[in-house]
Length: 237
Image (cartoon, rainbow, N blue to C red):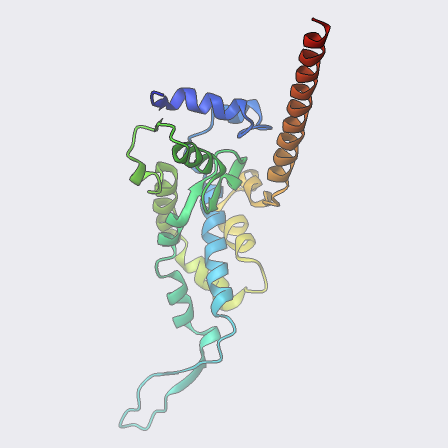
């Protein structure tokens, strides 16, 4: 069997339901650059998640130095310290490179951690001995895509531009979700916040799996009926 070219392979994936249920306007959008809304959404999600991970620490920091004047060190809980924020921001945008493009999903949901359904399907074909030609070596399949690399760069730019806003939220407004305070309050106009309301439930994948299972059962029944008719025809002969 010769190598499967990318164009033919994508056609086969669509036919077999990998992108089933995707609107027509999304068909021509399998590769695109992320929007400002999507960048802000992922930035705020990553920062909020990291702060949640360290928020229960009971560590107390000693700040300042004991001088000849007798000035005493300040004791500051780590959970409300500037050090905690600085550590959370460190390598924040580097973590964006852990995301993959899930082309079978809509809108901002296309960016998620873990292997996409499309790539899992392609790897399955390779394991079965099919030669899949994506134009890059197999060992580079897991490298960050152009979209994800762009996400990371835009994350760095946005973080630099709105660093003071993030600090203001951390010290004075944590009663609000960071996504609302940063993205809706400072980064985006009201007309460009739609992606913030997109949430992933997994329902789409479940529906696809159910449809595929029903189709497989129907095909199996058709094969049984065809076989039965053939047996009857032989008996008549």
